[in-house]
Image 1 (spheres, rainbow over the protein chains, first blue to last red):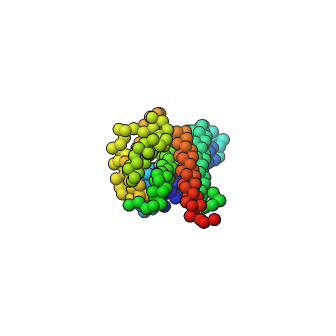
Image 2: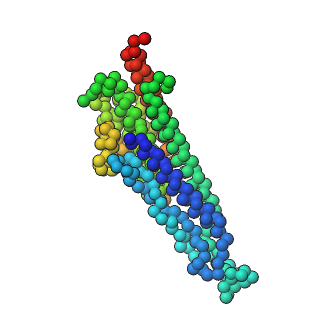
Image 3: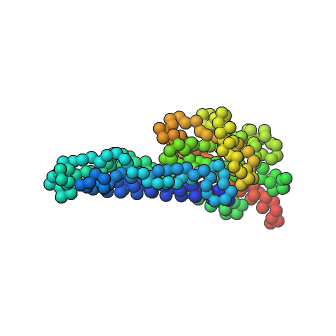
Length: 142
Length: 156
């Protein structure tokens, strides 16, 4: 039954957006995780989304396109160095390195992810209601 | 091949299948609202329904108010792209409604994103809401037809 693919599609969207919310949460939580080594400092993580053309089960059709997370990309930008010799993590020159997390970017990302998640929940609810109505087709009470 | 029941239910049975397919297409658009290079699609409902209509009552389907939401929604030029996409054993085989894959078209984006995504969430949401109302309308048409049939069959 093709209609049940909607649940797979919306579910894939919800899981992709929740991965995005997770990465935003780790980025925000680690925004101040400084390190004495520029190579080991935390880097902002972002999920990479990809459309899956009709990739759900047998009887594929072009109409169903779910989404999947192909990987988590790290921001390659150089970490910000900060002169802070009193910090116990500071290197020999007295510098600490802060993660390249952009707070504004992360907050907007969070809002966008939660809006998209809500959209998918709405799709799921509507599809469920319609499917339940369809199941009651021809019954006397409906 | 049409059974008596098919003839009795008329176009509503096909319309229900197409509406559920359109719901699937719109759900795909919303799920991929943040996917780079994803191109939003939609079903040309009128074309799909007249292609799916086995009775040849094209005049009836042409006068149905089941049209697209906005003249800019779908492109005739996008027919080839949509048809090429629908060639891999298509919607036709899974849902027994012919012509649906050729009615699958790409949206003309109003403001495409820099990452190549053409999903307009507001447009998709309103199309989804509209489609679910249409689905419910078709359901109630079918329901009343079936109820009429049952009351004609029952003796009391």
